[in-house]
Image 1: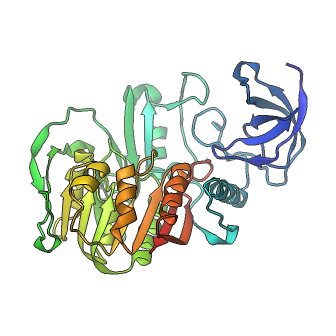
Image 2: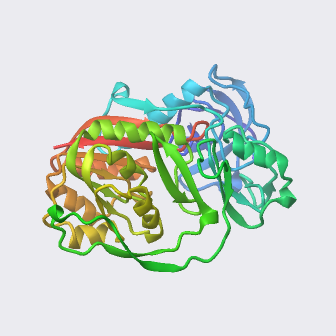
Image 3: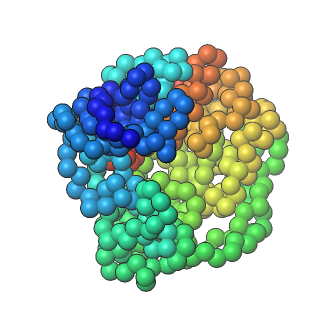
Length: 407
């Protein structure tokens, strides 16, 4: 297709800027809002209601555009905002968050959204290697990474000392950080062994909670070679590198402290979608009893280890099942809800609507579903008293967020 000129009007969720051609929306990867561009429309990606364009020339460059320092930028499937100045990146991610909330009837000003951030490079501890490298942005090729600007030092030391042919084959989880504390190790590469069912494990029983359902669950036997331990806020947190754990430990530690500060102190707290109990570790300093709900029983094995000696009960159930069968009669002073990308289950939302829990800390790795869920809660007795963009992944368009709601 012939070249055409377009103005990048704004950046939308996902990191592409958009413009208009003959009334039709055009997505423009790697553009900076305000730029005048000469582009080529990718006809193979054309749709009825939008097109995707490729930048051929920048006719009027934004003063926020910078030269990416990474030699792999635009090749590997990781960063997509490294061509934009750091401060401007944060403003753009905040603008995306505000727009998603506005689309769900939640109108916040720019000043009402705070940012929790850390280093813009050297922050990432967790990677998934594919046949020793990272997946190409477009296509099925593997990019042989020698150094990632976003990675923590132990990860880059491993990449520089081990040629791609000497790295593990297949999809392999890797976690490397100066905050790893066991046996002097600074990097753990997952072994893909089979997981075996373990005997039932039980959290510390607290009769005052008057739980109507038992809180036993069957977990798995933790494999020592895949177990990692980091120290955050003076506490050790154990997890399996094959499961999920936050990649940016600096921002995660700040977030955990912020949540504890916002929720204050109390007797009983609910940790919904608790994972390995990483947030509960922070909460244990301020609450006497923690109720953890997590459908992944592998993760709860580590939650039990992380909360050993602390008042807690654990439910190896989905949020929906717990809300329908185990929540009756439990009174909480606060709750943390950190659902997957799909957002809160409807039964969880209905439970929160009628629970009268005074304060909720709603975390999310998908602001679109969070905006939907927060909108529901604000229509059912809750008021937003604080909103934060959690800048876990600088140089990317990925957004995580925290909203504090109070009755």
